[in-house]
Length: 126
Image 1 (tube, one colour):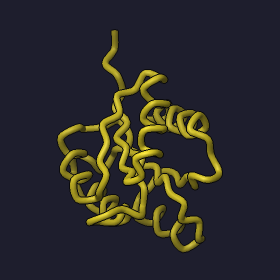
Image 2 (image 1 turned 180 degrees about the vertical axis):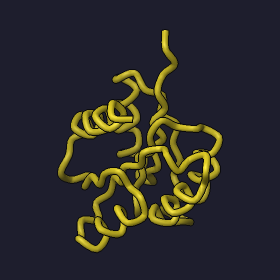
Image 3 (image 1 turned 90 degrees about the vertical axis):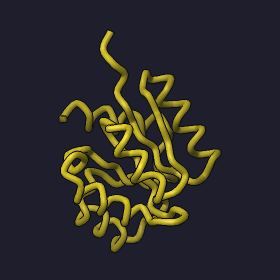
Image 4 (image 1 turned 135 degrees about the vertical axis):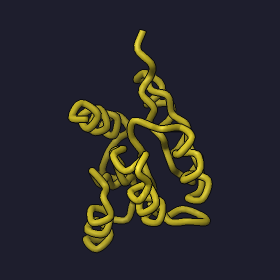
């Protein structure tokens, strides 16, 4: 049996993180997670995920800062990153893509099942 793909979730809202983790685990993924930007960077380096779902508004370090660090790390820069946030201003979306995000999902506009579908589509391209 092939190893489970790892979707690393960075989300400080426990209700949302539990909801997304459950949905991804039921779809056959391993879902380690971090609740703040600082521990996220450290844990992502250890986890070597296949994809990162990253909130932007986080304690200790913003998702934008986490994304910047990931893209500067030679071992992580190729890992696809989907920003999963409620920040929907064009400036935020543009900044996310400029920093290297592969996609930008506004939480309020997508169900967890739709988020899983978007992740799977991105992983197929990899």
